[in-house]
Image (cartoon, rainbow, N blue to C red; front, side, top):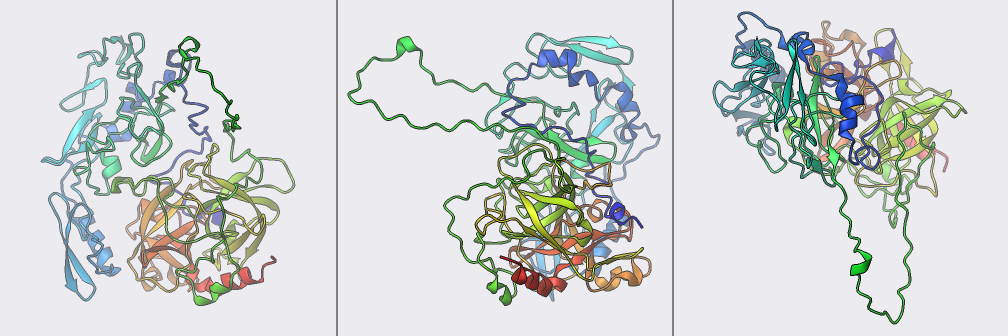
Length: 622
């Protein structure tokens, strides 16, 4: 069995992104004042994405006679509730486990009940009305609303309301700001006035963003590659039952529109888009505002004599970021620490013997500091900067060559010089490095640190069989400088190790890029999803994985299948909250294809290997 090919078919369902290694949208390089008129003639906008032909060939815009879009899906609902009941979710009402403003009632004996506001239902009020079934809106996008019938159809031009089936390319004129509609068969083009751009001439000459674009409230609604943005209340984004209605038109500029925004503190405005059944996100085709100059004209400078000339201050040249493949920067990029005062090794969540490990420059573990908290609608879709600071990208290249490194697996930082990953990720005849503090596999981010791997230690009893992988764990010892490898920042932190077993049904987080050496697809951006810990006895039933499971592994996901059970990156972390601290409870290991019913993901059980981890760290060479 080609095990690496089976490792979750990473992000194949909801979050799959073709691994076209396009450049990072570096504001200093790429987004200073685009020549959009030139682009309209020669650049990406000539791709004309989302035109008539694309619409009629899209499975989600298929005309289906008799499509009803039933509001209820009792069978799916009962199956979901049965799964949650079987897994005995923790019965605490603090914090509130109910989604969508559900009210939690403590029922005793580790039980609770959620009183759900209309139209939500389910064990945790996690299910919204399934009003946006395929065909409901014809050739239009179905978006969710807070009032009956709880949906609205946004027709794709040139299709017209109310049912989005009638074609009328220029009637009425879809072009804004005085744009002229030029009919081309069943399609059209907008001839925009000078200074206006976008498919509908809806982006004006003053439409730009400042700093990271958090305050941007412009009208750009396309990604940098020309994909049309989804409405923020699109059912593709909110199909997991997240409630958009309390946050829409909020301080972050989100609302029932498809304009680009930056609600999570990323580097610039972005949006979600869809390709087939895959829900993706990318940065937008939005320009950065010109930088105002504070230079005063010479003739206006007062000529006041200064008795003693001020001593000139040294100036630091502005750094430049070079675009790279995965990656093309030097093999090791050490960033100076900021007034380092090495504190004791983090011990939260660790067995007492770990206190004997030499001090490392990390003051805490398992405590992320995301740049900005984001709403639930992004869960499983996009990672905020600093939200998963222990995630690393393990990258390889042929030994002793100058070829570029390429991402092959995920990993998790547990100390300044130590990374945990899966045993099957190790290629002993390759040069290896880890990149941390970055959300993207392309482009250089000023928050990232890149460090060579000094030694890869695979578990002595690691073995592969045609049906499973056993003892699938490895430690990476990083190259140090003065006893320090990774430096702790807001974007680089260690995850804690667990100090005991966690209950079945607990919700945990998996993350990764989903790009492997044997996969033609993956994500350039780090993604995450929530999964449930599945009872070991249940997962060992014949219809699931049978007797191949042992105590070195466990299952997590959703037994009914779906994206949550196939998301992650081989070797990457499954982290859970333990005493309000994130612990690395599992490592992405193997599975039977991706998202199949009764075939959840299988993870390395880190608690089984705590003594092994401790012994390898203690006996490692200084």
